[in-house]
Length: 464
Image (cartoon, rainbow, N blue to C red; front, side):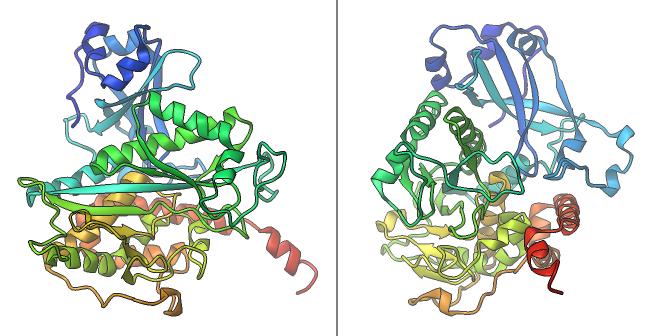
């Protein structure tokens, strides 16, 4: 829960005392030098201000322009009708959430990063800000006496530095001096090949108070997966938001890149952010996906049905870039449709093997290139709509789902069209959010269509 802010002229001790215990342990009696005040934009990029700690302590209110939410991934600004005059844009107010404060352990100075909520100047939450979109969905659950629980899985690639974007991305050189190769899933020696990067990720995570559940080598060359502990969606989205920065810093410290592109290399599998989801009763703490006979409940099936019915409307959020749709390929560990099955990794929704009390649904559609706040909001919104309407899912798939037709959108434009068509999704996420998000994605799509690819030059230049 966000704090309401801090008073002008407040002493350092007043706000330092609000920080999590993990930060105090890392601080170890040292004085904070700098504070980074950050929010997530639509792409999941950290935007904000950095300042000396003494200035942060004396600040009454801090502001950021509303246009930070109109920037595309290229850095351009999309033209939003309601905010069409760039010289008359309003400042938004940053509200520090001290519970979402962590160390910046890779910084040369003693630095604190504080995730902020964002409000307008009348004190109202900005409805289209990604963290507020997720909070809105969680509040809908709470109004029903429910608490959603999630556990994201983070897949990413370590790569050789790629200074020239015209060159293909390559796996990094490991400690053996050899380049990584694919199809080494769960190999311990493959993890150890990049041991110094992994060690830094662990150290940075510990300094920030984060607990890694497991870390494994995935199927791609240099592809790593980190699984997080299950918990509150907002807190887990905060962690994913900060982990992306953490992992990139650990890679750079060791002379390589970390990329969260959905499909960075042509002949390697894509990177997903699988989302494990369940819902508990706030009063009893009981998992409502499990009934009194330890069987799957009606809520479980309705949540699944909501995922199947409404997921097409949020694909543009779970797969937000043109590159995202290269991941949805048969027999490559990513889904091509929205079927479900128990312990079936070929389906869009998998029900993992677990004790009955831990019954959950794994969304395997989301790519690692998503904004974690928006992806969790979108996925949970689908399940919420299913439970509220009492929907029923299709029969589970007990065979390979790749043998069924490809029903996911083939590209970003089709996905945006589906976003337009699902009125229930537009309403629950907010029409304001829908309009801004779609405008930004249309702008990015137009920018991409102007680019002539190496494939076109290779095959069309002299042949057509």
